Length: 464
Ligand code: URP
Ligand code: ZN
Ligand code: ZN
Image (cartoon, rainbow, N blue to C red; front, side, top):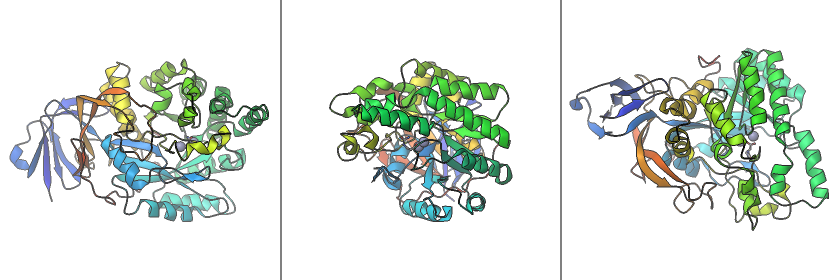
């Protein structure tokens, strides 16, 4: 088996920071300690001045996803390659059960999308749109296939939204099969009434996407989701949490000892509602749900991350090109495909605006971008750790590297960046996936299709 030694770096995990070398044998880490003799390996990588961190895990992506009459612009090749450039070595994407169809069909469809394309390892959540007559047994079958989590929508009536009975049945089933329910928490019925009024008043511009989705509609749904999970006696995970109002509900539940977990995304930490007012329809670039909020929310979310009221930063990467996809909603904001690109820049943005800005420790950065998503989603300690026996998914992170984010140079297949012109310090220099260097010094070395499906464990982590 090929061996590689990463020498002279500082190994940073969720719990410690230490000078140590890392010996890789084949796809796994064999040893982590100081002064491993160079002759122990066929190849050495010098990591002087670098951090050696577990590969990033983005637990919320939408590659090649049909939505709003179009399909997200990155497929499993372009999306996972862009992820790798940014230091992410695993993703968890979403398969979507079609109404009235088997979850198995959706799983097969998403496996086909990834086959021959994914360059990093990928897991799949299942979006449940309908429990029908056999949906609960379908969920158990999915768990046997390594789909250890399900997403349910409390928003998008008539498209993806499910009623409370369905949510409660799905939550209750996880007491038996050990899966985790992820909730898109917004009160879709209320939002739809507000939207109808806005449209009737001729309010069609992108900004009305945000103005018709109040933070209370998010908070109410978070509260209801957590209450239902409590009644069912199971944990729940709130996806893409965007506001202080919603955060309050998670914090209050956690303070009572309820196993409620939540993620936020770089866009909610760094951008605010004004972006949707950009002229020439450019506000559409920032149309996703939940929407961007007022500025006061941003420091509250950072604070939530610091104090573990929020546990994960994912991207909700769901790119649509401005020129030929976002434009579908030119005369009606409800027709703008919802979603934004971000898979490539998560680690850079959270490192720079979190660690460099003094808002997060280095260990907390690793924890929220890699270790905790691995734990929560049943991949730990295979992923999210630098220790003997773990997969050699390792990023050699250059804390001094300056980088300017731009659609002119990014690798995502989308014609704009939500963070155009943002300057960060700190970037992935070398990215190793299961022992193979797939990115080095800005050059992509991986092979399409080398990424493997991650069979995730239900009830996998010490987090419960
Ligand atoms: O606007 C978004 N977030 N698009 C992706 C689908 C979802 O709700 O996560
Ligand atoms: Zn969602
Ligand atoms: Zn999403």
